[in-house]
Length: 73
Image 1 (cartoon, rainbow, N blue to C red):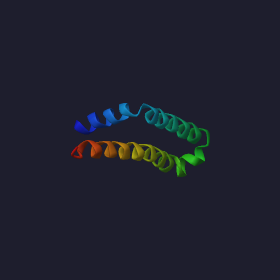
Image 2 (cartoon, rainbow, N blue to C red; image 1 turned 120 degrees about the vertical axis):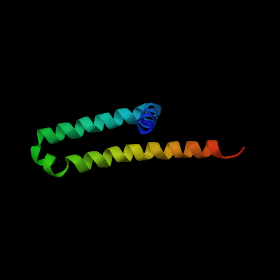
Image 3 (cartoon, rainbow, N blue to C red; image 1 turned 90 degrees about the vertical axis):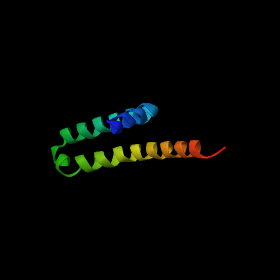
């Protein structure tokens, strides 16, 4: 349950990235439905790559923020 809570908090902290991920998911879905041959080869891997890129940048920012807060003044 904690994982879902933190995922929601991070998603809410970066709403533009969350919107980008939803848009990318829609575009990949639309392209794979339009060209069914692409579905067999690229749908899962391309979608995973793009979403992972957005989440990786968000996690790096969260980590930098947490490290700054943990440093003694």
